[in-house]
Image (cartoon, rainbow, N blue to C red; front, side, top):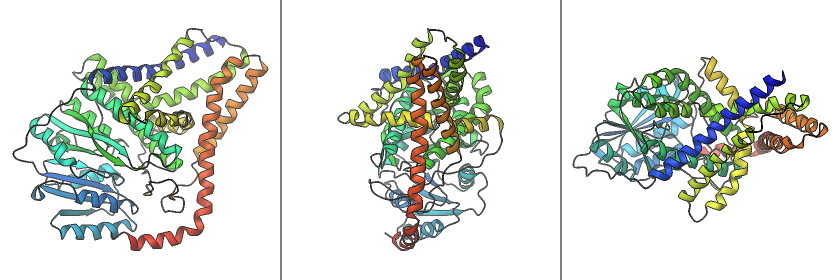
Length: 497
């Protein structure tokens, strides 16, 4: 029994360390390739472009999106806007009003309204693609605000390279300083978009399309099998299928599209749950194709690690669960694992370099949010683990979107608005795990084994922070119910700006 516990803990620790080593490898690739730039060719004749806007109940942010899309600079006779509106609330009225407004100004705007959300976002994109007139198809989610020159900066790369299947641009942030929660999300997203995407796209590794703020060649979508609702990560699924079939993906870090970060913890957890489940589904469905592809072995290994990125959550939980019997029985874990844990510095270095590149003058101030990101990473590991188990063993694909509230500055309220989420059921699992960590700490101290207490303390603080913040926001929503109706009434008259 003792040997089994020690071996299980060692295996989980080594597997967890692999993710830290992957972060270090990607960071080194980024430092090697960060100064490489591909100049766009001169364009004599622009191709037709369709801009697809998949929307479902987004009344707070859809006016901002539509105003931004209407300002895009591109030949008007070559630009088509498809508003893929599956809404069943007031959003549909807002969409129709803006569509009429911009059609009157000479913009080709088509509202595609489905009364049945079959396939969710993937279904909406596939449905709209049937009537899309563009050779290229750009996609923006409702909470994004594309800059005016976005198409002029991205389209030329497709003209110069017929093998380019899709191009992803960098996500920016509209409200990173709203709270510690949004600040922590900025660190996580910048790590991916500033470092990881550059490293992968410029070193021959497979990169993923991030679902929005990107543009596709229509023929690439069709020849790669089209949008599929078989997974909750239709973006990652299609981009990997396209690259396996020989299409190129490109990342353009200098083109930034700002978006709203979820200010509600329950919304952030829902987003991460969907991403964790979706990427696991893609791993399940495409791992065989990746292994059989013509990619070099190291690219195949990194691609599988990429798709399995959220697997670190169940590994973290396994380490916690094993520690109680290990401490109780006095099992000695092999000492070399102390050096394996140094791989945990990988993500810290990656986030630091990302902020140094994104904000050279204030990167150190942004890194003050890293402890909150670390606590969130631990705290949502239970929710993510449930998502991964579902992705591996279940076929249900209920797409639960991340609600947006159009809040940017500290003090702006989201608590009384529609779409705000109730206390998640995972709250009770997080509280249970916090209690488990506290019990293990007490046993360790009683057994005279204080060396594991700092490690266990990270779990305790992480689960308590996540559960506590969600509970506090839940009570904030309760207290905001008195002014929720007046706000709804104001929204009905204020969207026409």
